[in-house]
Image (tube, rainbow, N blue to C red; front, side, top):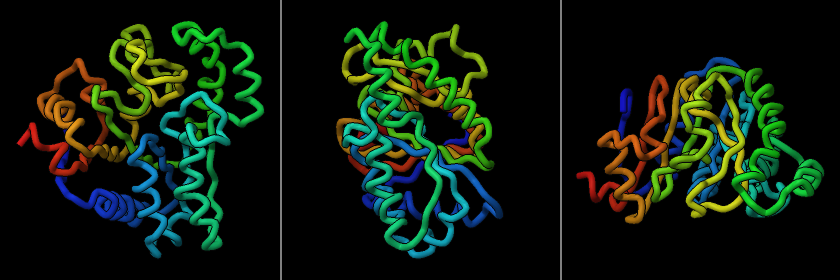
Length: 251
């Protein structure tokens, strides 16, 4: 992978916070932060919110969802919910209000859910309109862009899964946000996600992952294994932050 810079640390939250803070300091005006989901992300955002300097810098940031599960955004299965709880609410406690552009509201979700049959391979198509509407918002997102990505044991990143529609050759257009699902059935729910094209527009991508179960995926990423969606990520600069367990098969 081109432009890849690797940091192995046992304190991923602190390293992540330092990198975001440095990016923000270099940005002289408004910028956009595309956030991640998964179990690690809330810990990182809590750490970021605890930094006094970020409280001031956050006023320049617009927040977008790099990917989202098509679930009620008022429940903890939602990436939007966890972003607001781990970061946005904590900033609010310090008197800082920042714009969060979510893909859909609870009301919109319930209307959309009524169209679902329960079969992901067809239901995800019902989300195309929402994805296109959100893509229009992303086009207007202030630059520069920082995109935060996680990585699963199967090498997926954002909600880009192996053999999924969002990474099929006929979807490699200039679309910025896509409806998707996991054909393997490992990851539940219909999804909305940044496209590879959108990610490539970022000035900085930070990929974070931890744990022994991610070791083979990290090894595949470093070996440019193109069966892993994360290996397709391109951007001006990509920083990989992992712990020693995640690095154990690669070093």
